[in-house]
Image 1 (cartoon, rainbow over the protein chains, first blue to last red):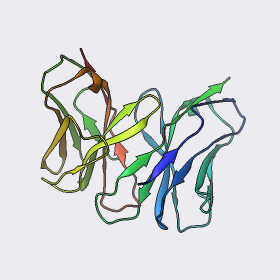
Image 2: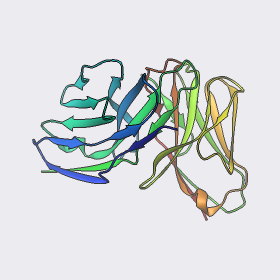
Image 3: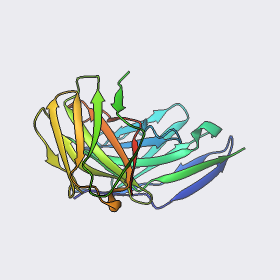
Image 4: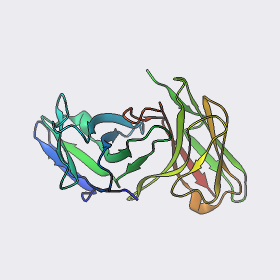
Length: 116
Length: 113
């Protein structure tokens, strides 16, 4: 079974600074997808960024980027120029590549605080 | 934009009651999911469905059942609510393509007294 681990229950960053959230996973599959989701106090889960395992290039979405190390099974999220609106719970998630019923496996979450 | 709507934001029920949590999506997605979210445990999958009338157990199905009579609606049922089912419940939907993200509702905070 796949597992996802986020070893940092809480992180904090100063506004405008950079922060990196860690995620490791365990799988025997070679092809899969990885996601970072953000859950602000409003509670709605929002997709931040997605990485396809067969792509070597790290995904980037504006101020958000990942460091995907397939051999190490590591998938960290870097937030640059942190903003107050980035404060949220962040979840790392894994998904197998299959045609139907493809489910996500989530990590425990990291609560990010952004200090003004 | 995809809209996943959960019927209640907050719900308070009593031990032993039968509880229904409803979820509706408007994007004709094949897959629908029910998760439970608890502090320090992340999101854990209760049940999912990849087609009408189809369902599969997730990681923690005990004490729950589901119903999917129509493609857009996925219901979670607590047959006899217990205090250890007090939690946040999140519904999600996605297309059958595994590279597509899941879209989530706003969650229902359920308290069982």
